[in-house]
Amino acid sequence: MSEVTDSLEETPVRVPKGQFFHTWKDITDWTEVAELKLRYKSLVFGSDGDETRAVLVRYEPGSEVPVHHHPSDYCSLVVEGSVEVTRKVHEVGSVRIVKAGTAYGPLKIGESGCTVIDIFAAGPQGITYVGRD
Image (cartoon, rainbow, N blue to C red; front, side):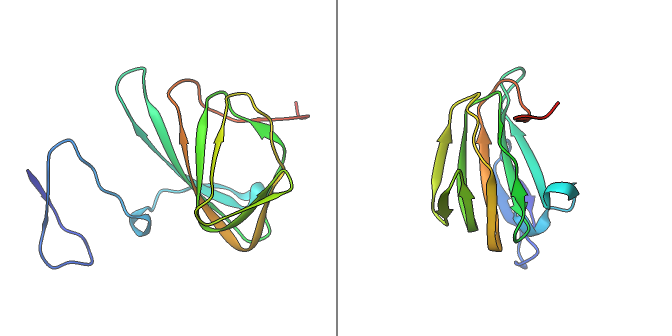
């Protein structure tokens, strides 16, 4: 086992090899999408050609994402705030499962912003906005 020291603890935490721990506060290399008022961090796991992706997304209050779809199935978990998706409000604890190619939106973010964890199945990744070139 290797040792990892958490900034909140004085003593190292024993971590078995092959495991990696992250906390949201430790993330420094967010990808910002200014025009959509959001930032995200992708964590990739799996093996060659079969990677799955967990994406932590933080939306600013009042932001909006146009109608779009993704090329792979995914699951979205609301962990902070609220988001309206296609006229239905999803709050903390809400879980949405979306099939590949399903267009939805717009996403409208509530007054306190929103944080979601999106877990994308292995396969092609990306986003396509409906009605845009």
